[in-house]
Length: 259
Image (cartoon, rainbow, N blue to C red; front, side, top):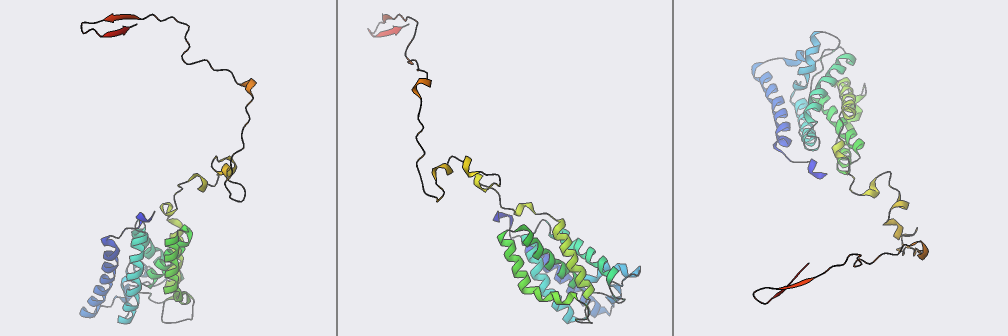
C-alpha cells in the first residue's frame, strides 16, 4: 500500500518551477514597467475572462507574492507526493474552475493572485484524505488543516476588503468538487484475509470453530460413526486373478523373475 507514495524529482520540481515562474513574471513586470493587473479576472466581462488563465500568475506587490509562494511550495509538494496521478489535473482544472467561478460571483474589480489555487489545494488535500480514510492521507489532511485552517476566515466577505474573498471561496468549492470527481481506489486497504471481507461468517469457518464465544481454544466434539452404515473395505492386496511366476537363470547365475 505505502509503495503508492514515491519520492520523485517532480515532488520538488513542480513546486519550484511553479513558484519560480511566479517570481519571474513579477520580475518582468518590475524590470520593464509592465502592468499585468489588467490581465486579471474582471467579473462578468468578456475581456475579464482572460484572467481565468492569467490571474494566478499575477501579483500586486512583493508581499502578496511572498505570502502565496510558501503555501504553494508546501501544498504542491504534498499534492505531487501523495496524489501524483491526479496532481496535474487538479492544478489545471483547479485554476480553470476557480477562475470561472470567480468571474461569475466576484465584485467589479480585478482579481489577481495564486491564492485561489492555494484554496483549491487545501480543500482537495483535506477532503480527499478524509474520503479515502487511509491513515497517512488522513494525517496529511489534519496537518493541512492545522497549518492553513485559519485561511477559512478569508472566504467570508467584509473580513478584509483588500483581498478577493470570492476567489478564495471559488477555490475552496473547486477543490471540493475535484476531490469528489477524482477517485483514488488504489488508496483503499487491500483485503488479505477472508475474515476481512464483509460477507465473512465466523460460524462457517473451520478455524473459528476451535474457539468459544470467549475466545478460548476448545476441542471439536467427537463425531460418533455408526458402524452399520460403514461399508467394509476390501483389502488392497486381494485379487481374483491367479499369477504364475517362472524363474529364469541367466549366464551370471542370477535369478530373475518373469511374469
